[in-house]
Image 1 (cartoon, rainbow, N blue to C red):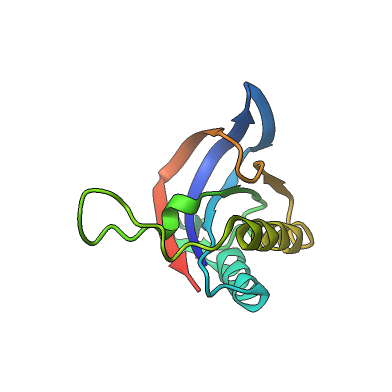
Image 2: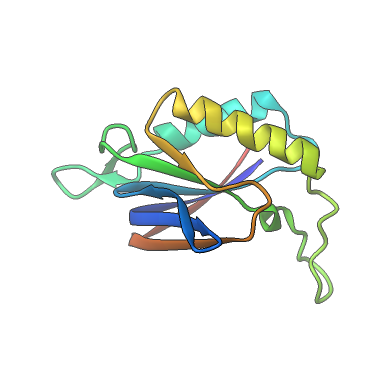
Amino acid sequence: MIALIQRVKHASVSVENQIVGEIKHGLLILLGVEKADDETKACRLLEKILAYRIFSDDDGKMNLNVKQANGSVLVVSQFTLTADTRKGLRPSFSHGASPQQAEQLYNYFSRQCRQQINTETGIFAADMQVNLTNDGPVTFWLQS
């Protein structure tokens, strides 16, 4: 499971010109699911993301996690994160989970996240437009 996390001042996701998820201060999580992923990996990745200290404390140092910073989370499925781009000019998605497995784990991840922090989501497999104001910019690639 792969997460590209971005510290944001604002983020929203729209489908057919309708906002379906929106947060202010917090994390945008772009989530890719691979074939070998399962609920255990999803929980480990979520635990790491929510504990990851990328928000500034009173001294301006990255010492706070998203909960300590009173932030929210926006989770958006993004299968292209699973692409193998090492050779050729076309990405291979052979490591990506099937749509059914990916949707199940995306929904599981999102449910687990909602139990711990204010969470918004996109719509799995929809044509989504993501709008964000990246704070920093601060962006990290995490993998379980």
